[in-house]
Length: 98
Image (tube, rainbow, N blue to C red; front, side, top):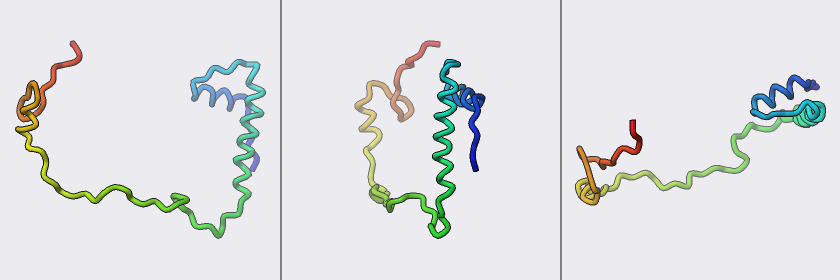
């Protein structure tokens, strides 16, 4: 199926991308966009009937360690290093004035 790209399509895409395209470049961009879409349309001509869909082209393995419960640092010892603490948490001054 041949997709027709119009000047309005180019203006629409430029607007979505927040690009200012001078009127003198619209024709050139219309042709370039049509060429790109035509190249992508060629993919529909490829016979993929015997190919199984895949998510990844190479095997993906989990490289992270197993999740295991380990003892944590004692909270009171950690808070002892803090300049200020409140209700078992670090207390930091406000950074914004209201």
